[in-house]
Amino acid sequence: MKKTILAVLILLCVAGAIFAESTESPYFVRTMDIMKVYPHKAGYKILYRNAKMEYATFYVPMEWIGGASAKAELIYGDSAAYPYFSIFWKDGTFDHIRLYLHKDRTHLTWGDLDPTNDISAKFEGVESIELEL
Image (cartoon, rainbow, N blue to C red; front, side, top):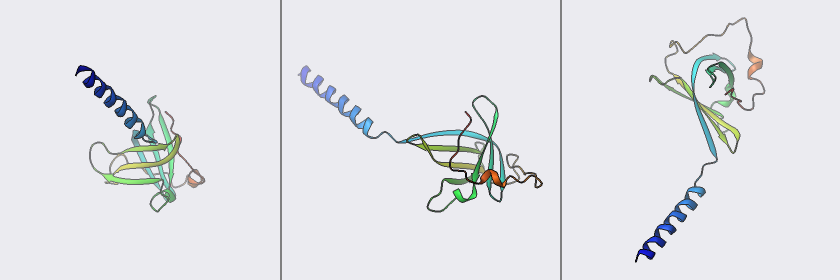
């Protein structure tokens, strides 16, 4: 009887390990706080703090947002957690990003860009986001 119970337990453990491997996601996600969001006609400039507590920036082109080939999703809210972003890599390659932005555009995390400084070129040809970790 003890051998039967032991055999069943071993079989369940092996089956659980096989099942766990087969359901492993190809996605890796990282979530980080946003310090400032700068809207621009060509997209969004995002200022965040990296793991070294230094400021870093990335650009999200407007054409990434919405549509069938969307690489970016905007989600608005007003909880204390906003703003932040979650960036997704699939099989080690950038896949998409979700920006969780404060819905009140007067919130201190929304910023204004200097209109005399044209940064349109920063949004051109952006294919992926490389975070400074």
